[in-house]
Image (cartoon, rainbow, N blue to C red; front, side, top):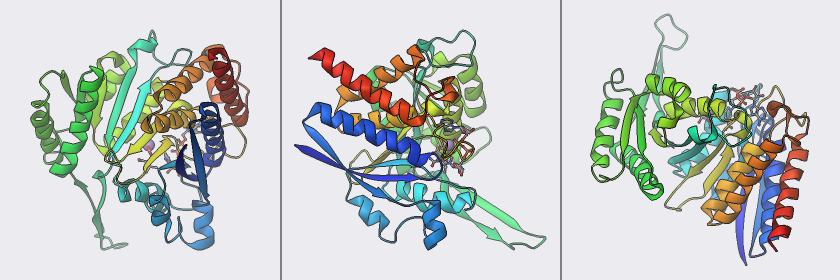
Length: 360
Ligand code: NAD
Ligand code: IPM
Ligand code: MN
């Protein structure tokens, strides 16, 4: 039997609540399948750990995680700890340290999901964002000069390497080619006269290797407008780290909300573990109240199953989420329901068991 070692970093705020449901669902899938198992190791890292120890993760935390086949992360960030510390020393440390340079974020409107766009149908909103996840605006390069003095200056560099741009753009083309879709690049070369000019140049170069894949290229401001006015035009989308961050929250808003938005941070070469996490944050406004929607985390669990080669289970989980959205019986308040976080997780498990029973 294959056993997958999963490092679980539930983190802060609603992180532990949604991750508990994700783990519950993954355990149910493994049990129903019978040919594989998960071995979960839970790490207590996050902002409370920081307040007790002065560190966001254990000193040998990255070595620990390196032993895992994948990482399942809830959310990081709490009001008592500066965000740039908590995120840089945990979430971004993992993404960068394990060279998880592909951030895959589906923006797909499932049937039954609420959509603020007038007349938008599920088939109109079906994008796959491929966000550069290792460098760009998140390179962490810069300086803070004359701190606290009247002539204070801060500089934040964007770092766009040929290697980094080529590999993410090529990943997008490979994905589009395999799925028979178009690739849209989103950049901003009219204002960012080094980084985005370079990005566009590399996009044009790589696209020559894929003459059969249709391409589009938009400036990020126009792209934001089109995502709302005419989302159909986007299929596979490739963009920089910061633009991808911002546009996928916009994507979440048009595809059912933060409670349904999933993401995978992949190291495609599988030299390091990949990490699966909902794209939302720790939502301190609703934490510890069982109000959080765990379906984004369940969707991320589906991405993990797909990554391990269990497409059937990934598809089944998405189908179950869609069924629950259409039935509108067991949903959290963000989707207009009254169910708790754990009731939603239990319902997913019940539907998994039902589906397996009817298949037999
Ligand atoms: P957020 O995503 O936590 O919350 C934004 C809004 O969406 C809130 O109103 C929240 O209640 C709602 N929401 C989010 N997830 C939900 C869910 N599963 N179910 C129902 N409602 C949900 O963003 P924020 O408020 O800007 O950030 C809060 C903290 O989280 C900050 O410290 C931030 O840095 C951090 N953050 C972490 C991650 C991560 O760990 N991946 C991502 C984004 C933000
Ligand atoms: C996300 C988050 C992170 C990001 C933050 C918390 C650093 O917003 O995963 O979308 O910007 O990547
Ligand atoms: Mn974000």
